[in-house]
Length: 355
Ligand SMILES: [Mn+2]
Image (cartoon, rainbow, N blue to C red; front, side, top):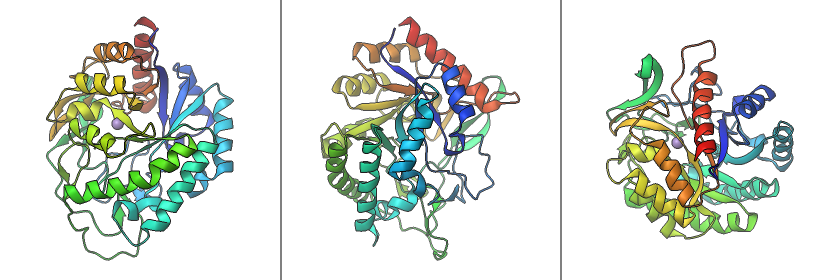
């Protein structure tokens, strides 16, 4: 048996009994939950993963009630009734930290807000918060029948140069009253200064709360998207992020797909290095063909990454954290998301049993 734990990621609209049963039926012992409903007040397809788009996904601020201590405790108790544990919460609500990302006037109060959120999460006994320090967010992606057998999936075909509109960050609208202008382009250096302030302020809070903050790399990992710099768009930048503030609470939401899409480095070396160092809080276990700015997401067994080799590396390093499928192509059926996830989970369950 491999030492890793099998998990499934559930979007906010999936936090219900049917999806908890589905996760357990797939062999999951853990789930990773999204509290932000990315598609609230939008007409995007909620059964597919969020792909981005010029207009953004939806309105930020819909998750506020879900971050209170009683709500987190209730969620945890609900999930546990189905034989599952919450391994992590994935992503902050842009309404709670837009001025931390943008270095705006509400930055100080938003640091207070995130501090309280981190303390609540720790008190509820949830050990990890995944985050993605990004202005443009998950953007510049397209969908099409890219995966095996014409399965609908996600890919990238060139960089989206459309500027981010005012009032939007991380693909969600946080201020409907904002003007019609665009977010000014900043430098990589400025973005790193902002993440340094984020880590300096919140890592000590997380340490005290018993929570690990886990950084997702950029999706897609291009140097700039929508005229804004990206933070972790090459494998070496993960180390730079850790070196800014070394701590068990400054950790990685290690996305194999995003790492494989990067133009430099080697996904196996990155996995070995960070697994051995204990940097990895949890893993997005997905596969891909190609690299930015032209790649396609694939079924887990069908991309450039040798997933069996990855599991071997993780095992040798003693990794015993959670892995989840992240995204998968949708399978032609009455339940495209469920079929795609069940396929990935079966494959991962076999790797867990065999290695
Ligand atoms: Mn990912």
